[in-house]
Length: 292
Image 1 (cartoon, rainbow, N blue to C red):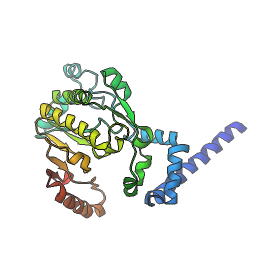
Image 2 (image 1 turned 60 degrees about the horizontal axis):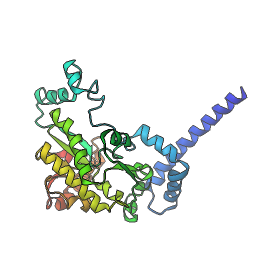
Image 3 (image 1 turned 60 degrees about the vertical axis):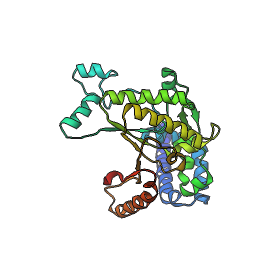
Image 4 (image 1 turned 180 degrees about the vertical axis):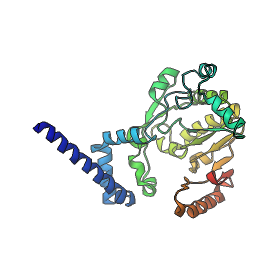
């Protein structure tokens, strides 16, 4: 009985400490400047004492800790591993979803989203082993300048736990061909490719950010040109490592995230994309995202 009471008391204390830590982060750390005491304390906690807790958080509460584990559509879109088998059985498939969007709802073009390096933390080692791809786990090294603008990059999932990358152009060509083939087979018309600017911070020890971005962008655009023609939207792509590499895709997302339920953000959103378009308009066609 005493042991049970102690466990309950410990659970109550742990829950209270977790809530207190969360409030402190939201009210103090997230509003503090780079190099301030709250940021330094939180960086120490997140990278050492709370590292396992941070990993559990990213895995359970967000998509940012996840890696691409398969090329085929997952259970959100298909009832079985084989789209053709599910199609014959009358079950849900990605191809059926695309057809319904176009035929029933009049959608002219259906695009799929993916990150430049596959998913938020790249490609899983298990997928690489299964597909004969040489996946290397690389840890982000955000510069001091980037940390001044966004201190949170010091404890994001890419920095803490690494990202699965493919480093050679032949490997990247094979990767994008396998990534895009199931989408095209399902009737998807194009892709919106996100998380592009983050790639440069992964270049340490593997040739540098500009070289890494050039390899990824070159392989991506070659695959899109072959598979989808002109249907490509570059997203989160405002770093010069990416912008100066585009030779095929000309549609560039100019906006930050749009929050429909936050009216106070709407004017600032329009102002930001307007100013961003002054630069991006010299390099491509600015996409105002939700305002198009």
